[in-house]
Length: 577
Image 1 (cartoon, helix red, strand yellow):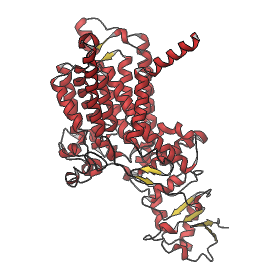
Image 2 (cartoon, helix red, strand yellow):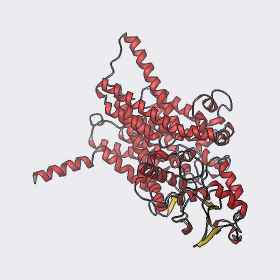
Image 3 (cartoon, rainbow, N blue to C red):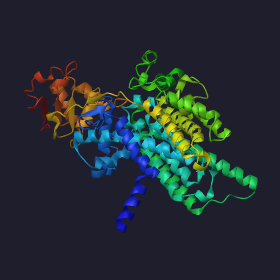
Image 4 (spheres, rainbow, N blue to C red):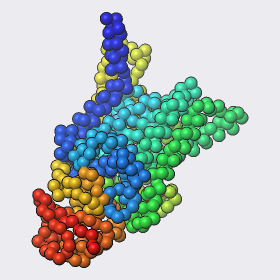
C-alpha cells in the first residue's frame, strides 16, 4: 500500500506541475478557441477550400516522399513534368512526420485539422515559456501566450497554416535563453547555464525553418542579430575587464553544433527555392506586389471579419482597406493597453522597456511595408534589396507576429508587478484575491481571440480519380479547383499536370493551351508527346470553362479509350504505334 500511495503522490505532483498544467491547458484552449475544427475533422476545413487543401496536400506529400523516395522529395507529383515543384510555396516540411500515418484525401484533411489545432497550442506554450524564462510571472506569461496564439489578426490567416505556425519561434528563443542562463529580469547567471537546452533551442529553430521561409526567414535574421549582439557584448566585457570572459566548453560545443546545424538546414531548404527562381523568373517577388499587400497604419487597429468581438464593429473600417486579408492586423486592444501600462510600471528595467518599445516600433514599420518609407531608404524595400532571400517575402503585414510577441513581453512585465511572492503579499486572503484578479486580463485577451471562422465542406474525391494511373491531366485545368486536384492526388500520388502556385510554369500553360480543344487530334497528339497518359474530365466542374461541352465531343479515330466512371470521364491515351 505504501508503494501505491507513493505512486499516487508522484502522479499528483506531476499532474499539478506548472508545465503539465500549461501544456494540457493550452491543448484544451486550442480545441475550444478553434472550434468547430474538431467537430468534423474529416469533412470540413477552416476558412475555405483554397490554401488549406493545398497545405493538406503539402503535409501529405512530405510524409509520402520521406517514406518512399526521400531523394525525390522536392520533385512532387504535381505540375508534371516540372521538377522542384514542392518548392513552389512554403512546404510545411517540418510536419512530414505526421504524414507517416494515414493515406488518401480524408487522412490528409484530418491531419490538417489536427495540426491546425496543435499550432495554436504550441504558440501559447512557446510564448508562455519565453516570458517565464525572461522573468515574468505566471499570469503575465499566460497573457503573452494567449496573445501570441490568439491575437485577432491571426484569424485572418486561418487559411494559412504556415503563418499560424509560429510557436517554434518563441519556444526556440525560450530554450536558447535558458540554455545560456539568461533572463531579462536577472541578466546572465553562469550557474544557470544549461548546454542541453541551448542545443534543443537550435534544433527547434531549425525545425521552424522547415515549416517555411515566410515566417522562418525573418526569424533567422533575428537570430543572426541576437548572435551579433551577444558577440558585441562579449567583446565589450573583455575590453572592460581586460580578461576574456569564460565560456563553458559544453555550451560552446552546443552552440557550435547548433549554429552549424541551423545554417545547414537553412541552406538545404533554400537550395530548391533558388533553383525554382532560376528556372521560373516569373516566380520572383516584385516591389509592386509588396506595395499591393502593404497595410496602412490604421490596419493595425482593425480586426478581420472572423473576429467574434470586433468583426462586425470594424466592418466599415475594413471596407477602406485594399486587401483586408493581409491588412487587418490588430494585435488586440487589451494587449495594447496592457503593454502601454508596461511602459510605465513593470518588473523590467527602464532601459529594457525602452528597448522593447523600440522593437515594437521597428516591427510595426517593417510590417507596414511600403506604407512606411515608400520606395526609399530605410524601409522594407531596403531589406529586399540588400538581405538575401528577403525579396521572397511579399506580405509584410505578417511581421506583426513580432509586434505581438514584444507587446506580450511588455504586458507580462506589467502584470508581474502584481504577482507578489507569499512573503511580500502578506495575508493568504489577499494573495488569493490578487491571483483571482490576475486571471481577468488573460480572459479578456482570450475573448478577443474567439473566432467566427467558417468551416466549409471539403470537396469529395471524384470516383473517376480513385486509383487513376499517371501522368494524368484533370480537366478543367486552372483556378482553385487545382488545389482540390492536388488534395485528391494524395490517393497514390500519381504524377499530375494540375497544380496552382503564385506563377504558372510555361509547360503547364502550353499544356493548358493545347488541351483547350480536347479531345481532338492536335490535343491528343500534344498530350501524348508531353508524356500524359490519362485525362480525367469532370463535367460537373466544367461549366463556364473551355471544357463545358468536352463530354459530348467525339473520340472516333483518335486512338484513345473513353470510359464513364460515376460522374466523370476517363480518357486513356494509348501510345502511338
